[in-house]
Length: 158
Picture 1 (cartoon, rainbow, N blue to C red):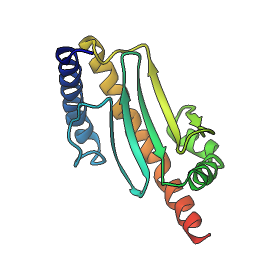
Picture 2: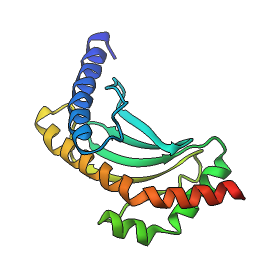
Picture 3: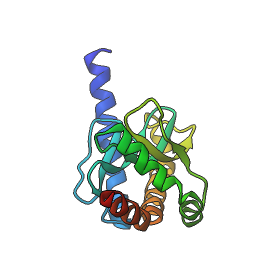
């Protein structure tokens, strides 16, 4: 990829994240200490090491997720399974079905919610993407906050 195209891609992402963070910070303090990035993802801590709330953008989709990557694959899968045990409660609170990705061959796991057929490089999609991402990140955090506290506290006692 040539340097000019890479700079343009990075500039677009920084501009998108700047707008998203402005709206997000009006709805929640979750990302208040996060700065825009040139990357296609932006994350913040959940209050528990190796467990992050993450926004992801591409030319095909926008996604909000809880990413579990605490270091050891076995620990990540165990934590994911404990959260998955409360799937019905979480999805009921969230108001929709989530995408539960244990990622068997990967180190981490994720719980995600997607908006398909949007493109961060098409500024006409930004309002739709930002509204989707900020509203659903707030819902995701609210749906998982108590569950995370319960399962991580229990896991650390084992």
